[in-house]
Length: 341
Ligand code: PEP
Ligand code: MN
Image (cartoon, rainbow, N blue to C red; front, side, top):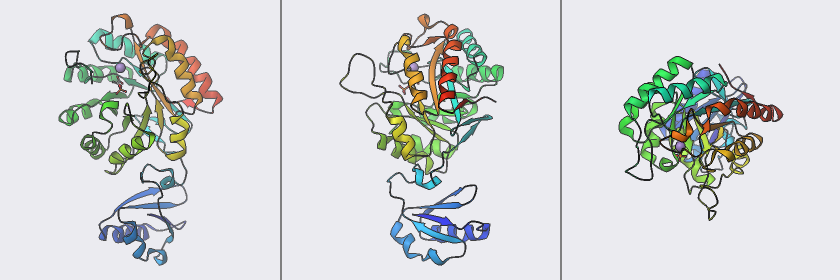
């Protein structure tokens, strides 16, 4: 149930409503807009309706939240887009996040060279995996803590916020030391206990869509993070499994307008993993911007032919500046600006 407060409702009136909602075992999520404050009362809508809050001081009206994903739904933000602030960069609304960097952190030279090029091209954030979810247990699994250390060095050197994947809750504290954004990979989208821990950490999170997950399942997964009080969630379309075998995954760009209609959360596209080949990455990047994405996360490597993983799809750093210019041009057409500090 959503409780819409009157314009000018006082802090005491808001606190009173929160207290009443919590008394019956529901949780209250406050969303303060420029004019109105909304209180999402999550759990037991029938009991909330019986509280008689309609007549309470400062309350304007109550309205049921129709979607199963309560906190992710557009309704709780009165149709406004969430704008996240990450390391001084905004994501959402008219702010477009260009995240780029290698698939995985391999060594110091590779990471720093890639980071420098990404920063020089004017990206918003730097990506790089220290923990890698590999299909084969015999493949390189990431440098782990050494990878995190190299990401910290890259951050210090370039000033770019870091996006890096968390695979296992046992590494959360280590990842929190360097990650400005925790990436939850496609394979962990439904690892609900991991999502809850990331939610509790409060750290901005990029939640990737599972290989076979529906848009609604992605939204429900985000709810596990939001429910813990972490509002800094971005959703990411990265390609889904279909019958098509001509490329790695089917990039579902229709998920972008669909998600934008259903949720206030920023929607990001990964144009790298679905093609699996670098010569198709530009088309998917530009299409993602045109489709209304709030950002893209793209794999860029200083020497892709030598990359340990996802070698075929990583864009060489030497070509990234030209790609950035095209992305900026399309962003401009759709009324967005690449976000920088
Ligand atoms: C990645 O970003 O390198 C990655 C492993 O992504 P996904 O979880 O989408 O496969
Ligand atoms: Mn990859």
